[in-house]
Image (cartoon, rainbow, N blue to C red; front, side, top):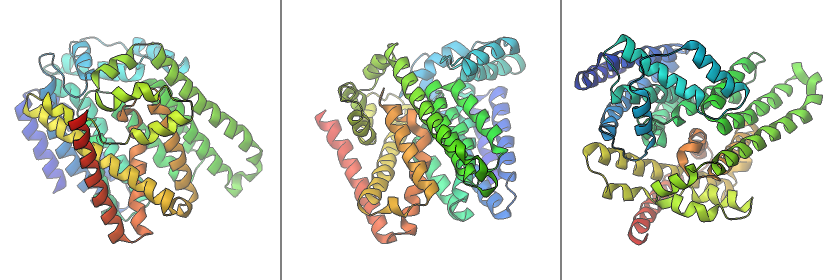
Length: 446
């Protein structure tokens, strides 16, 4: 049934868009989704996975079509990046594998942070439509993100299956896909959801029992993420170090434990390199100032927060970045149905993110949940919090740290397994009320 619903959504949107290239792109995602679901050996996991795919595919495809209306005729709403990509890549009619290989070599082996892998992927995506179909529509270009968004939701589901029964993992994966910032960044043209996909692919391996052959996939994930955004990719090295640490705890590899200290040192170097590259990139361009001018709310304050001492700045930004403050301002500049739709999604994801982050912090800091976590989850949380703090220290834009959000949500969904569920629900309601009041207050006084 869920596959039929997804296919009907495909036909519906395809008719409205009117481009065979868009229909072909949706069919490609449909087949990739089926392959992802049926790669699970467990029948219950396949059944629940088909529900996740059907729901997320249908909603994301419709959302992407609505959102694409916001970026027609050189206009933009919510983020400016889609217009730059539309102007640059919509008209591409040639593509060279050798040129792409040269760009990727510079990006992956010489750490050139020019979005090489992402740009080449989008170029090839546009080239296929212009060379083999009836051209590139705004929706078709947008669908490059939606493809990654749906596949990322399926990877999140597969991660949740490690912790919950398939039916509950399905429920949580759908809630996450529809309410989190993954929804809105799967329907506008920015590179973050592509990074999130590779992160989820790699982290699904990191959290399970390690196998020596996993290292090949992890290195591919590292190369892919470095090719899309340098410092985010470099930070993935910290997770590879964590995976190696777990591997060396296995009795079969105990004789190699002398490598633990070098592994820790290399991990620190990767994190330091990620932080240094982030600061260097931001400080040597006008991007920070441009973004501060575009975003009024949290980003308007970020320049002052960046003046705080190192360490203090990162902790303050870690907590400040999760506050739901500025998205109501977008309603005042919305001029169409698609604008209002994006503004609503932005409000939803800010409230959702506020609830799960501060809810988890409340239980960890005041209820002892951190001590009750298993070793795996405890260290994943620590690394993720460091990732958020370092990533947002140069500019407070939540999408830059979205790779951490699925694990914040996952850990918060584990809380009621240990604590009183009724009190947990009450905490959620209180946090929702607080978040809404904070957003309203900020819009009235700032």
